[in-house]
Length: 160
Image (cartoon, rainbow, N blue to C red; front, side, top):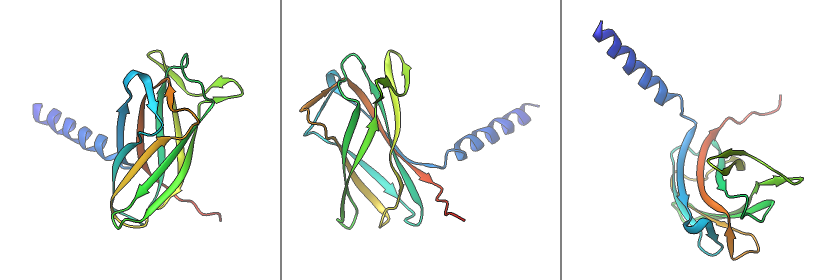
């Protein structure tokens, strides 16, 4: 009987870890004094194995709404591939729309989830360096407690 329970637990553990195959990379950063400085980008090392797949580039943010002044957070994303090819694009996190906060409250902070680039293709396999900076007109952006940057595999669907 105990052997059956152990086998059942092992099968559940294997199934639980294999269900999250869409997530390719994930990392979090916390800002001192809830302050994201404009000229100090956050750097992430994203491993890419398959260049034939497309990906969603996503961002989660935890925001103190009493301090956060913006409705739309503009992000500057700079990517450097293993062969030193550089790509740059802007991403946008919609924090407020028509005066209403977007997201859900967790522990007194607003948690906003956003895809900042959909159906993105990497050109070469290997570790890509991704720098993300806040690109607002403010030197220090108050109210940002922490960010989570993640890349997930996307299912590209062509029109029929």
